[in-house]
Length: 194
Image (tube, rainbow, N blue to C red; front, side, top):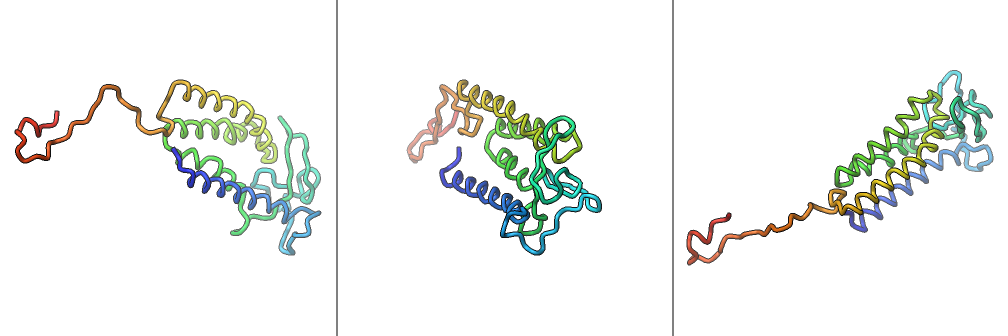
């Protein structure tokens, strides 16, 4: 399915994404000694929040406080984050690293798992609430069922011996290949391929 090299590359990609995204918090947290002079807390009144989890002046606790508060349907999280720039990724980096591997993995099952994960995660949480700080925690709540159902799906594929999950083409029993004879003295009947 995948070589060890490609799995190591994927792991490095995911870890570097995680580090880059976590640094947005380190560059904005009031306790951090790394907060640059260019950091501006998000003013939620004049500039509405467009990212999941990001704290602003209108979220409970303010723009400089990590806070969990009650949303309409579930908990909501508010985290101070450095503004996205060319060097600091927006929340989209999570979306890309979460769903792109499903789309490039061989086999239709991987793509179906990715679509299932997207529809029952960020898409459904966006339908439930408009609060961007609450959507992430709703998806986190759904993830328990998502992981269970996807694990059962993978287990069912393994038990049925499905090769379509990236294990190569299925083998057909009773098939054998016929080759043409390379001998110049071979009869015309021997060179025909059935």
